[in-house]
Image: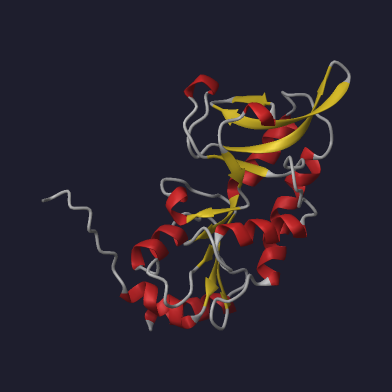
Amino acid sequence: DAVIDLLRRAADDEPATITWAQSAHNTSVPRPVVERVADALRPAVEIASEPHSADDEALRTALDTVGATKVLCGPRHGVVGVENWNASVAARLGLAAPDLAPPGTPILITVNAPHLGLVNGSIGLVVLIVSAGESEQKVAFLIGDEIRTFDQATLPAWEPCFAMTVHKSQGSEYGSLVVTALPGESSPLLTRELFYTAVTRAKREVIVVGSEESIRASVRNESSRDSGIAA
C-alpha cells in the first residue's frame, strides 16, 4: 500500500522524479513512454547522423546521452521484454533496419573482448566518422577518457541497447532517465530485488511501467536462490 501510495503521489508532483505509467495488465509498450525515451535520445541520434571526426567533442556528448537514458526490463522476450522495447524505440526514432544498425543506434557488447578494450556491458553508439575526406559508419565507445571507433563488422557479439535487462544493468547508474518496465503479473521475475535494482539505477528520473498488480507482486515476492552452492 505504501509503495502504491508513493507512486500515485509522485505522479502528482511537478516536476516529478518518479512517474507511474500504469497499465492494465502489462500487455503493451505504452506509446507515451516510448515517445519520452525517444525524445531523450533524439539529440544523440542527430549528432550521430552527421559526420564528425573521431575526437569531436560532440561525439562525447552523444555517448553521454545514450549512456544516461535506458529502459530496464525483466524479460528479454515477450510484449514487455527487451526485444519489443528496442524495436518500439528504434521505430519511433526512425532507426529500424534489417541489416547493419544505422547511425544513432546504441550498441551493447555482450562478451568480453580485452584485445579491443571492450567488456561485456560496454555501450557504444553507431556514428558517421570523417576519414580521409570521406564519411564512414563506425561504432564509437568511450574507453577511459578516450573515444575509440570500430568497424561494426569487427565488433564481438553485440545487440541494440535502447533497452536492456535489469540483470545487465546491475552496478550501473543512469544520470538522466530510467524506465522500469515490469513483467506481467504472473512472471516469476517479479520480485522486490528486481524492482529495487531497477529503480535504484536512476539518478534523476524514473518512470515505472506496470500494473498495480505487478507492483504489489514485486513488493511481496522475495527471490529464492536454489543454486546448490551450500550443498
